[in-house]
Image (cartoon, rainbow, N blue to C red; front, top):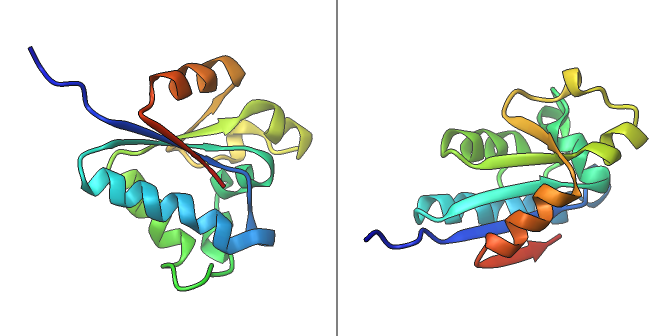
Length: 124
């Protein structure tokens, strides 16, 4: 019988307007992945902009964290899951075709199930 792998869910509701807060879930999720913990980031509100092609490249640096471009690339390379709120991108007129390949659009039900199945949930 195998042991259940730990899972953490990070909710990111910030974009460049609160850059430091947007960087924190990506820094934490990268650390979790390095510790062999499953990490999922759900982008909601202005956080959905992070999944737009090219947005992370120009996002202001948040505090002493690495640039968002580096955090995002590391998160993807390590196998993190990134979900994007469907209603949030619709409100911001962001078509799915403008999202980076590593992201997937989701809705409330899937987020709720992921939260129930996770060992911890952090909101930023």
